[in-house]
Image 1 (cartoon, rainbow, N blue to C red):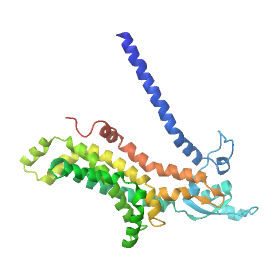
Image 2 (tube, rainbow, N blue to C red):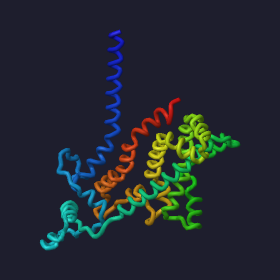
Image 3 (cartoon, rainbow, N blue to C red):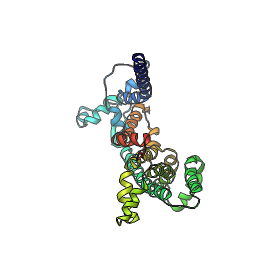
Image 4 (cartoon, rainbow, N blue to C red):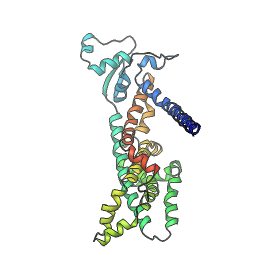
Length: 314
C-alpha cells in the first residue's frame, strides 16, 4: 500500500515537472518578444546579443509615432532639444529621429477592437439561438443542415477571397469595418452553433417544461432558463470566437487598405528609413496580445469548466 502511494506520488511529480517544462518551452517565444520590445535600438541587431542591457521604452514610442530621421552629422540645437518632450528625447537618443505625428497604430487597434467585439457579439447571439433551435425542435434534415453549417468552417479563406473581393467591390464593402464583421461572423457562426448545441443539449428539458407550465412563453423560457444555465458555454465560445476574429489575417490583408485595416495586417510592415524596426514590431505584438490575454484570464473559470465538463452534468 505504501509502495503504491509512493508510486502515485512519483507519477504526480513527474507529470507536474513535465507540464512545467512544456509551459516554459511554450513561453520562450513570448519571453523573446517581450525582451526584444524593451531592448534599445542598438542592442536589437547586435550579435552576439547582450544578456544584460538598459531597458528602454523607445520601441513602444516608435510603434505609436511617425518619425523622420535626421541626416548623418546633423544634430538638433540646444533650443530644439529643450523643446522636445520625454518621448521625443528617447527617440532622438535611440535612433536619431524626430517625431512628426501620431502613428497609425491607434486607428488600427481601434479597428481590431470594433470588428472583433462586434463579430463576437453577433456570432454568439446567432449561434446561441440557432443551437437552441436545433437542440429543442425537430428540424427536417437537421443532420444535413448541421453538416452544411460546419462545412463553411472547413473552407480556407484564400479559396473564397477573390469572389468575396469582387462582390464587396460591387456593393461597396471593400475596406470597411462592416465587411469584415460580416465575414468574421459568417466564418465563426458554424463553430458557435456546434459548440453551443452541445451545451444546450445537456440542459434538462424538464426545466423548460416546468417553466412553461407556470405560464412562461418560449422566449421567456429561453431568456430566463436556458441562457443563465448556458453562461459557461457562451463564455467559452465567446473567447474562442474573439481570438479567431482578433488574429484573422488573410481577409484583413486582402480586403482592406487604410480605413478598416486591422493590426495583424498592418503590423508586419513596419519598415522605416533605418530598416525594419524589430523593436517596434515586438512592442506592437505585445500590445496586440493584451486584449485576448485579458479576456482569457477574466473568463478562465468558464473556459476551463466549459472545455472540461460542459454546461451541466446530469
